[in-house]
Length: 197
Length: 197
DNA sequence: GACACCTTTGTCATAAATGTCATATTATGC
DNA sequence: GCATAATATGACATTTATGACAAAGGTGTC
Image: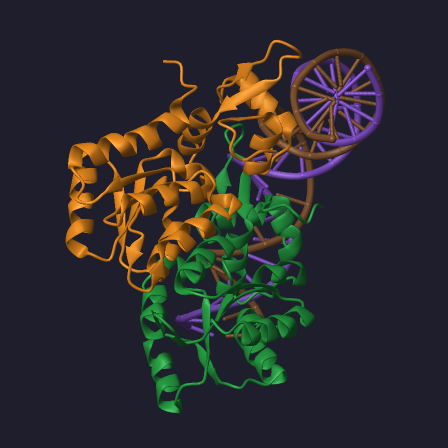
């Protein structure tokens, strides 16, 4: 079973869910699980992202193999030293990372890198952090992207970022353990919190 | 494995559809998918337009990388009046458009909207237009995205933008006919050059 | 608890599509 | 030119879709 496949067959879905593939086909017919039909016999192909969404919605455990999807972090910070520091910390934890030092690069990487989470300094020159949060939240395709504000601004400002749409915040300077803990809460725990043993 | 190819091999089609290339060959034999045979061994080549049509007909997801076949233009300009004007002109020509008024929004829309072409004002506040061009050109996934610089800066600056990686430039104020002509040169010619009616 | 009723899931058989393998041929890149 | 990788092809194995039917589980009533 190739792991690099981006799509799954009904049989593969069946194995992951511990059911018969006949059942999986019925789930697809009833619209519980999104799938695409191939031209020939109408074989189903399920996209990995759709499958993970299905698992989440139904409180099913998510196989560890699929969690690697959720390990991309975009670091948005104009201070190179800070960004590098965060990157080193996250690399140790197995995250894939990219650094964006200005608004334009951040935007491009949001689209191309599709990070699960971004760390955002809302106090960057020429970039209105609050506006960034608002804009990201206005994009339906980015609704699952977590925003972790990492900044040196006043507590009141940090709290305001949450009201606008950020998922959490940390005040600079950030302790590596604290950062990892927070990110894991947002990224790793989120899909698993509904886990039923 | 070049991504800029206008035709696809059976192997490439197979990857995109999540099937074995043997299956793709059968689809071609059965006429589900249009393809051309090369003289030598009879290798199949599928034109991008035919593949996209095939995907549409079978309700299969269309990779973002292929969506650039359509006529989408991202207008990057902080002057709302100018942006609106360009948008009106392009709408009349059947282009789908989005406007980005700052660097971050431009970046996000680059990724999410996958425009075939962007019109870029390199004289925006807080945004270094040259840096934008360089950064876009550094992204392999955006290598086919055309950059049309539309700005009021000096001719020498406009020419410099070409050296850096822009595909063409127009000096403000821009005549609608001129804009349409230039965009059609950049957009239409590229993907259709091999098209035999 | 017993029962009927309903829904979901599993099993089976069959036909069709898809995957796998081996091999020859030829693109392709250096 | 040469070495490597990709493709076409046929034969064969495996998987899948489908319908029909059985089994398992849930819900309500008595």
